[in-house]
Length: 355
Image (cartoon, rainbow, N blue to C red; front, side, top):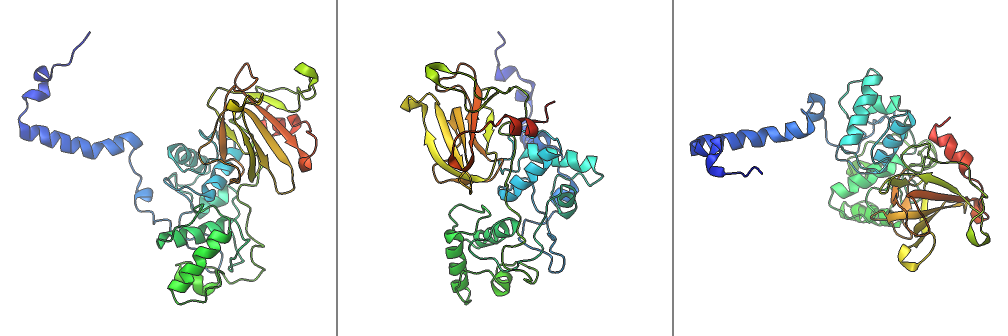
């Protein structure tokens, strides 16, 4: 076996000054070698300052770029996957190197500058609908415009429970009131023109009731894991102890992500340690009372708990074989309006792209 002997290494005989120069030069080159050369457009791109053009409503700066984490990123990732681009990690809301590479590929395929930054042109090509009206934002609003408000609040140093999640709830309202009070504004918790201006936002005039033009953040549906054709229609098939199969089984390697098919709230979590045949499992409930049941998970995703709201495409767990399962797979059930299970196979197949 080869053993490393520092005294025999050629660099060990180099003068100390040369060695220090070599190390300093290497430290400058490593970042570029790891991530690739930084394109001029990325290096000079403005920071994600929340800003909308006053006339057209189009985003005046970048919508999303590497390093961002928000529901806006989820929308971008879903749009990319809808074009057929495979995205490692799915719509997890994290703009990392895989998302950047996917954006570059999309841009190159559509004759756009392949800088990996989602600006107005790329957003339009992806079919993303940005807010054009409804400048007054208040409790109950949701979507991209709320994310921009939340990011602006946090940039002032205000702590915001839940972060920039695109949902204008009581915590966001309280943060707005605090900001308004600190800046001599009427502390009504409503983001109108004066508050928007103080936050550095340039919003169009409100010509419709608040929230009417705001797009939903990741409403769905999306395929519940990385796209695969390893499933079949086994709904109603007999199971031990007189049971029947009430879902669809999607085979996937252990550790594969399980995605929320729709935007909703986690309303139940059970763990394999309890001895349930479902193993690690959770229930995702939708606004109309419908719920989806995910079973045999290897693990529940970090940050997912009862009461957590998620956009469609969010990673809520990883696939495994806990409980009564012989191979790694996702057992998925759909219960419309909270009632009896219906066959999810047709929907899953339509989302898979499988023949």
